[in-house]
Image (cartoon, rainbow, N blue to C red; front, side):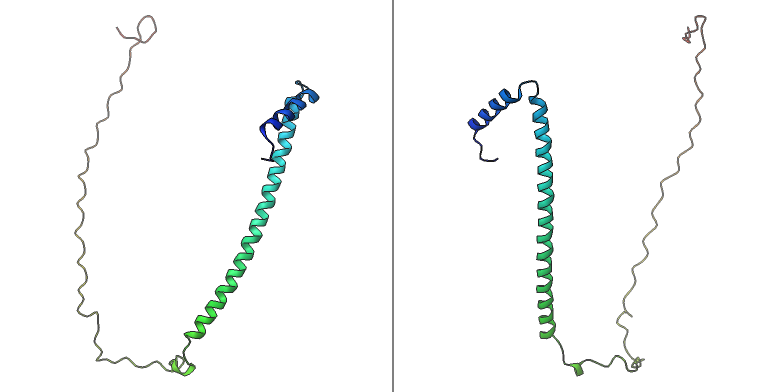
Length: 142
């Protein structure tokens, strides 16, 4: 933990017992535990902040690298300006003699309808059982 050996820890515990006393020692340990917990929470928060800053700086570096690589790829694979067709011009007419590539494709037949389960007969309502009260009033029939 802090480089404290078990014998050193035993000496510290013995001195704390003698100085603080057995009656107030649990209160002191509880107080120390609360402050240690607060210190751990603060260090955890500080470390999370540093981790976030590191992640953001790495992300910015990666984005710059990706942008440079993307620009290099775009320059390497770019076509001359005059090689692209003029898309702003008139639309060419469709040749009426052109063969339809989908003309001989037969559509799938519709699937057969699924047979429904036969309907159940409605149940007959059962008569409610009633218990006749006997002379004692317990409700048990003889």
